[in-house]
Image (tube, rainbow, N blue to C red):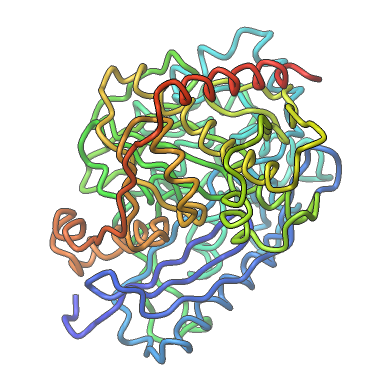
Length: 497
C-alpha cells in the first residue's frame, strides 16, 4: 500500500438507505453521506426495492462523502462494501438492467413454497448443508420466484444471459463495470451455498431449479474484488472488502473470541456470536452462518434475527403517525414511569428467532382508558429489548457458552432508555462504542486489512473507543414479572393467520 494514503471508504448498503463513510486510521469519521430510497409494497407481505435507485443512491453518497470531506480520490487506500443480506437482484448481462425489482429480505411472497418444502421433508436436508431454516427470508426462493414469474427469465438464465446477486454483488458489478462476485458471508445467506464444503451446492441448485451460470464467484471477505471504474470515480480505488452487514458489525465490535455477543439495533435486530472454526448446529431455531473468510480461514457464527427492531419505531412514525421523529421516542418513553401494563408484540411481518412464526401478527395488549401514546412508545422500545432477550438466551443455550457481555450498535443503540432496559433484562453489561456505524466500520476493516492499512485485526480492534457501559440495576422481581407478561403477550400473537 502507498503509505501516503490516509483513508478507507466504507459503502454501507442498508435496507432503507445507503451511506458512505470515510474513516482515517484511528477510525475517526472524516465525512459521511446518507440517502434513503423508496420502499415498495406491491401486495400484502411483499417488499421490493428499485435496484437502479439503489445504484444511483450509492454513487451519489460516495461522491457526496468525498466532497463534504474535501477528500481527494488519491487519498483513499481502498473501499469496502457491506450490505443488507439476502435481498435478491437478477439482471441482464448485456444490458445491465434488472429484469425485476429487488426482492427484499423482509418479503414473504414465497411463504407458500417454503411450506411445500417443509411438507416434503426437505428442511433437515437444507439445514444440514446451509445452517439456515427453510424460510422466505433467504435468497433461493426469491431467485426461483423471479425465474418462474418474469417472462423469458428461465430461458435466459439457462442460456447464461442473467446474473444473480445480493446487493453487494449488484453494486460491485456496476462499480467495476462487470465483475460478478460476492464473499463467503453473503453466499452463506442464499440457501444454496454449502457452508461446510464452501461451494455452491449442486443438490440444492437442483432442488430449487436454479442454474449455476446465474451465480457469482465467491471470494474471501478481505481481498481484491476489483477497482471502481474511472468513469464513476477517477483513481481506480480498489475494492478489497465485502461482508454482510451483521457479520461486518460483529467484526468491527471485535467479537473474535467466544462468549462476546454483538447485537445490532437497526431496521431489524441481529445478535451474533462467533463460534470460531466450528459450525454449531442450533436446537433453538437460530442460524448457523459464515462469519467471514480471511487468509483462507473460515470462521462461523450463530445468529438470531428480530425482523422488527427500528422498523417498529418507523411504523409508529409513518403508519400510526404518533411520533414525528424516531429520536423523539426516548423522551416520550421517559415521561412515563413504566409501560402502564401495555405490551407490543411487533410481529408485523411474522416473528424471527427463536420462534420463526411467519403466521404471527402484531398485537398491542394491556390497553386501558389510562393508556397514552407515551405508553405505546415505551412498549415499542421495550419490545425491541424483549425480542433481543429471547434470541440471546437461545444463543447461550445453543452454544453452551456463558455470555460475558453484549456489544451494541446500530441507530437505536443511541437510545439510552432502550440500552438500560436491555442490560436489566439480560443481567449483563451492555457496551456501546463511540462509533455506532459499526456495519460500515467492519467493511472498512476488511478492506483496510487487505491493503495493510491496519497491520492486523488486533491493531484494528485496539483503536476502537468505548462511549458508555450500561450495567443492570433492575429489581429481580420486577424483571421476572416483565418477562412473564412478555411471553404471555407473544403466545397470544402467535399463529394468528
